[in-house]
Image (cartoon, rainbow, N blue to C red; front, side):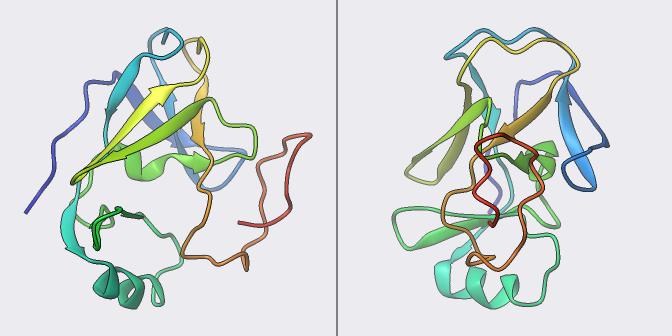
Length: 137
């Protein structure tokens, strides 16, 4: 099962944070819904099994025992990098993962979110460059 796609005009390009990132092409107003993460709906158990073999993890756990794996079948939100000072936030609702702007975002800015607890389990060095960087993801 795939989840819904996004409404965002964006592009994937090289990021100073990590590999490739997601950059908006349009101005985004604070609190605006940006779009939805898509991918395969799987169990959390399967998500954790898959995450162990991935270097780049594009899996979001939901609050209902499910997860969305955007690694293979996801949309461009799988390229959103982590930041300890993000410009977007994630809202998880039922089987949806939605992204909203935390502040006004200018065209050309990289979109970032705070991963919070992640499949990296604090073992991956954070490279966000924020003054408030916690040092690990």
